[in-house]
Image (cartoon, rainbow, N blue to C red):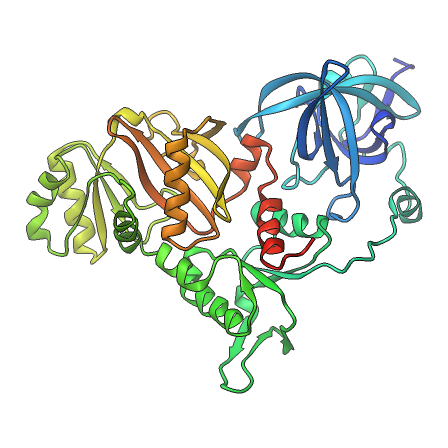
Length: 455
């Protein structure tokens, strides 16, 4: 007992062999494995052995400080997070130093940007060596700001980056934080622009965009619109205003607004030769019977045109249920699509992430038990999947047809071959970055650099 290190629920520790002099950890005896924040993870061969290299920003909310690490790969395993999200992670073995003692521990590598701590210390690493007093914090002391600067201060790069704005509503959202971080890591000046705080002056000679408090938003090189569905109209108006000021929009306003119109999107995609599940659209409830026949009868899917993240999507298992759902929506004057149900997909679909005409990542989403919608927001789980050349071709073609530089393309595997479900102009990053360990936010920044031929 006297040889054990006594710690609180939060402590500072270090990883000498990784070159990390100090990092704040959440001490959690409820978690089995330990996890370390890591981005840009890549495996490679060294002396005939599997190794992994990765980058870490050791200080929370400081994306400019980066440590490049390498370690021998011990394992790859599926880890379930506290939120129930499953992801495959690389496992490394390295030395942990805490309270003046040092020993070998296994840690998994994962992007912890959405968490409050860069490090999670689990019970396997603590066993036999640490005692936890959960009511205390920093029993081993904390580094001063001066000490942190001494450890991590680096001369700023001479090269001036681009000025990029993230046009969105919630700065705490994983996707928005990752885009901000990725831009800063690549040397750019990043600004979070809250849609609600922006307003504009329409003027032939001197158009302007102002920010709350009267600040004029000028000298931006690019904006990345991340517009939530409820803000589509205003968000697109702002994006158009930036475009009028000759600011490059990673997705332009016209492409975003047409992507939000599900029916128009499907018509555009069909015109470009992309296959979709058989779909019907009608105005009058009097045509319900023929509408159901038209898509091959029940079971069928009923979709609200304004729905998002799987909301407003209903599976009608019988003709009677289909009639009830369609007529209920119609009585509310809601615009709906009816679509054939692809039973053989078995609650699974594919999300292909397209950036600048290339598929940069893909995952399979699987619906929760008893659910048919595979959306992560609906409790679906994500896993890495190998997509076919045909599926990649469809995704690239769909993004091009919609004129989107960044698109989340949802595809379902049917007995007729791959069918396109929908194209999202503000696809979330958390599920797909977690599942694939790919730096998709970095790919989005690279697309802006390519536009400006910035190196």
